[in-house]
Length: 88
Image 1 (spheres, rainbow, N blue to C red):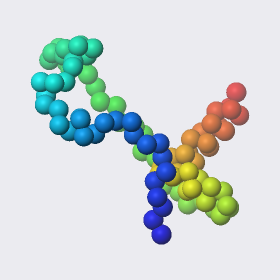
Image 2: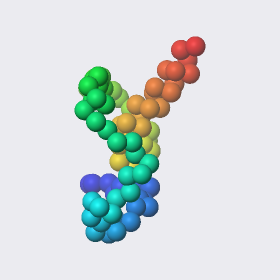
Image 3: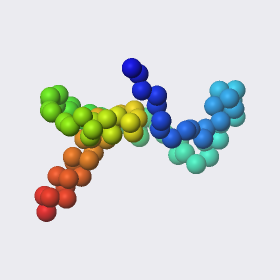
Image 4: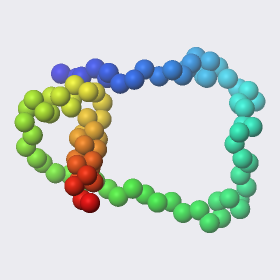
């Protein structure tokens, strides 16, 4: 059964955004870029995550799934926080 996404609702006015023309966009708070801006740029790709299989208690897994989309990312964040808290 597919779970319903229960994340935060977007406050973006999508109708207004989709109806805007490029000339209507305010770029005043964004600096102009030139080829010099990109000259020394490098792309850093994130490290790939390792695919593993672990056994998790059903109630724990269901709790994370109930929190919505990207529950695996949330599990990873909790594990990372634990590691960081116990690494010092």
